[in-house]
Length: 126
Image (cartoon, rainbow, N blue to C red; front, side, top):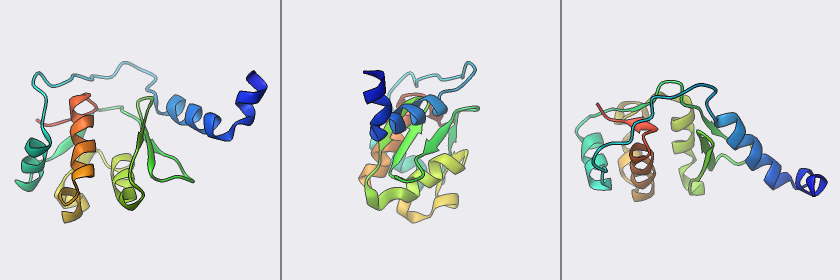
């Protein structure tokens, strides 16, 4: 059974992504007291607001599949046409229009993903 699992490249890839994206120390992940809606996040970004990554949080994109992002041991699939989001999440500590451009708020899937990450406490708004 272990040999079959190790031979399955897809399973091994997901295991490695989840394992490597887990923090080695306690993170200050605090879910917001009231959930953010997609509209709230959209308005915050449109008004020039920043969304900050929790200090020490690991976000990794898979090298051969840039539409898969691993955040703190969780896998998130991003539509193929939105791989810029994966690059933004894995290379920046701040999500905002200044470092991404207008495309950030022009796709509901992007806003939905960011909203999910905020509501899980991985990114936050001050």
